[in-house]
View 1 (cartoon, rainbow, N blue to C red):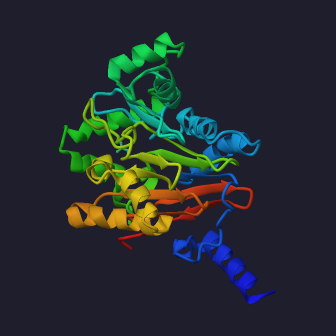
View 2 (cartoon, rainbow, N blue to C red):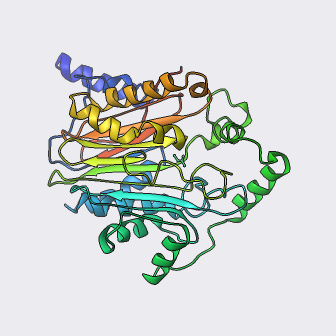
Length: 341
Ligand code: GLY
């Protein structure tokens, strides 16, 4: 075996076993795909299942836009995922409110914010993009638009999420936001910031066989948020951005911090300037740390990006952020490197 092949094999193995994010450093990404070959990248380990849904479209030569919509619909309909769609944890008043957006290869985009009672907010966001002169519909207007277009009204609050919310209500006492974040991101003082609820969003980016890119991002947002609160996920440029000339990026974590730096757009612009996906995600995270060094120690934010060459990478504030990749060559969950160790 040549020394180069030996290195690639070793790097692949150590990533799979130890989850090193360093293999994504510039010039050392062994998983580079050829421009134009299909690839899908999404946040967290549950992205692996969502990627398979996207791959049903991409693997047949389908469009990236259709792939990302189909892919994220899987966690949206999964009642065991308490941070996305059906089964999502409610706000502090007991309402499950969903935020979603979608963006295609021509800067077309659609978004719904604070949408209730709809199983697949991502499909409503796509309809906003394709059937209205607008980009964002929010709240009751978004619901009326969905119902008028044939979406069914459903109860998104599962018995488990209602039970968890009622348990939280016993002690939460409408305390400030940071307590909620601690509950969400450091449940039970887990030594690894995160614990069972350290994820909160699926962001997915795909490049199809034509080399066209699209993205989707969908979430029920921070658990027990104030009623009416909207995070980064449905905000184009914050939770998701796609520029078909450069690449795409998406975010997970405390949305307020992502919005402040318009994080996903920032990552894409850094890639336009020549940075690798991992380096661009790293610089975006560093900007959050610079703005609020103390707060950044207690919260999680992660970025993941895919460039036009098919290279991908991620980076987060805290350990524990992961992203999933599927192409003809790779089907794997990667642990991202992090600012705090
Ligand atoms: N990143 C999801 C949220 O903050 O709602």
